Length: 227
View (cartoon, rainbow, N blue to C red):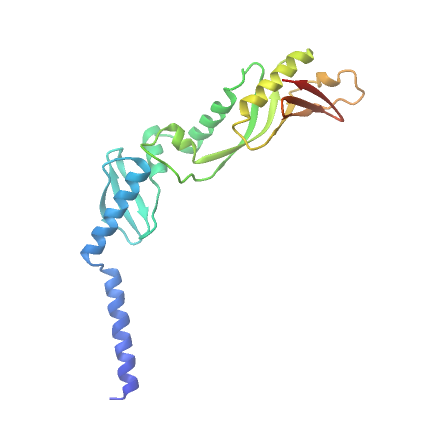
């Protein structure tokens, strides 16, 4: 037989053998992967009595004592999972997205008396991958990130000092919640009391802090308040 034909046959047989080997992994490899999956999950979520119950085509189905339903883990050397989404749905039995948005909005706005104003925020998904221990609402909320767009002032007052104190309280309340060192504010359905005597009244302004002083900007003017 032609040596070239023999070489081609050997190559084809080798490729088929590798494919069969890859599909039907030896038992010791499967046991190792399952062990590493359990270790990975224990590291992220604590001891949830995780057990890999079956292998699917590209993932593994896992059960846990944390909930009645199963979830999926994908990967071979580096893993990812959908545990948090499934766990949240199991715990709340409702729309996870709505629950977390309400949770974050309440968490942020609770820093200010609702009779004085509220933070206008935008929320967006940003999967948070550094979980440690059994999930709770705080951990689940880290699946989301948010940006504080404005502080909307509902307090009806023309007393500048009163508004000064409210803005300082709002600024301090979110100073650790955002990387921004400036807070935009807006008066809801009313004129800006800082400019009540001005011909042009801007309903918006901003407050920032430098060293130990606060700066409240409105239009082309500003006022400095020492802390």
